[in-house]
Image 1 (tube, rainbow, N blue to C red):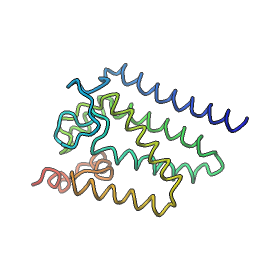
Image 2: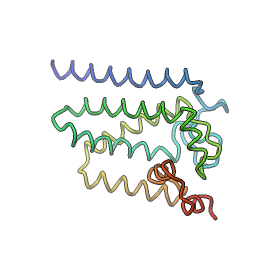
Image 3: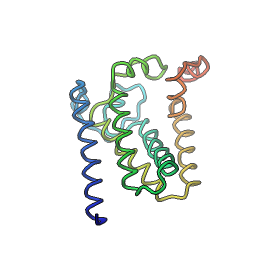
Length: 189
């Protein structure tokens, strides 16, 4: 198979996965865009009902980090697999997570966290952009030396932690077990 044909097949597979993500979310009753009726590039208010409904928000960096993590893990697990095939696997993983994240069980689990009490799930637009953000993080990890990738991930985690009292690490910790100290810090107590 020529590289052009291989690229076309993998690109088609990724497009199919993203389309499948959109269809699955639609069948789950997710709204296509914010129920407010507008599309905004950025939502900066962590308490806004438009959070997780618009193109980008404070949780976009966590999806970039997903991509960096997927790149690193797939590079270690499948070193001889072409990078585009690994990207397709990462898109499949992210799409699966986005579908699971918008299930009633996960939405309810997030609502138990201090900052996500009013979380209703993502709009389809936001969810698809989360997958695109993961793809961007994967691509950055592929292009940059690994120390730069790790530095970017750490900077993103620290910045979002300081600015909104939440990030990927805290999200995972709170999802596994609620820690009173983290909960109090996130509430500003």
